Image (cartoon, rainbow, N blue to C red; front, side, top):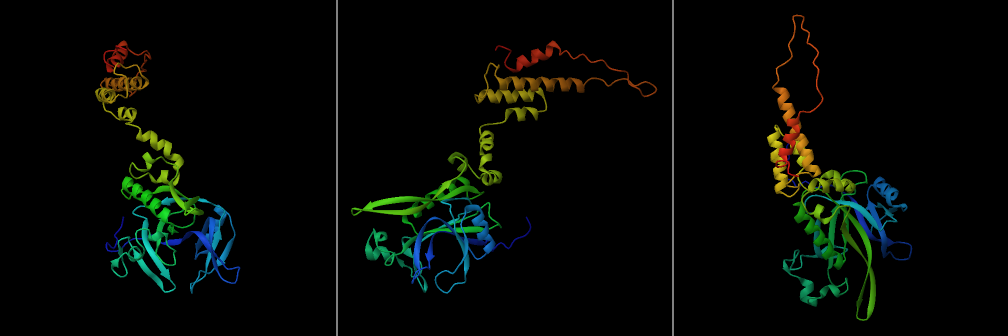
Length: 341
């Protein structure tokens, strides 16, 4: 890689937003609406057109509340979107309170960052401050940057939720993935809108929650270190990854060995690991014995004197007997421990 400015924070460009709600302007006053499907918005119309092609819906021009430039959006038909969690730590969280004048509070749960004071909501309403109306307290705001592998351009899309439940679940998933991969490599995930309900005070409240789930690979594969990029982009390649991770490739090691003794060392390691029968006779032992025999034959051939050349530079025809010598079979048996099968 060529030179970089070391003090810069290299950050992928934000291409747009993934939302679970939208503003309805059809009435006298704009009103917020919760969506059962994903809403994709961006300043670039061709991004939103690509989203509509993937997940359905009609592209429309849209102006966010406040004095903000117009954008494009599509209310898709998809309740789940395939995505990639990028390297690093793609998640950020704060308890936030906003007004028309911008952010009024931004708290990490202990300290309100804008004022430097202890958590203002907890001081006013106690430990269960989050049960109060969002007009009076902060909202647990969680932002997750993801890549959409089937969309145009290279950059991130920001999914944002103010759900208290999603705040806990997103953080747990992101932290486990970060711990398992060391923050390296891409991880395939699905962002799915899931209906939930909660009973409190004798009333049942139904609401959507966005869940982040590992897609196409098992937790063992996702948490065992960075995934190969090809598997992250196409999780159907994961079964091959599982086979490669299942254990040493003894046959490949034997093929790469220089001598038959080296092949027998590979067999002994396999026997010690319990991957072959110590008495031989299993398919892997037979493969390794055959490779050892071939190595012996190649070594014997290399030490034979070359053919005699006559005065005209011609070589007499050499008749080869295709029947393997009895010593070869004896050597194969010895590789399995004396042939006691």
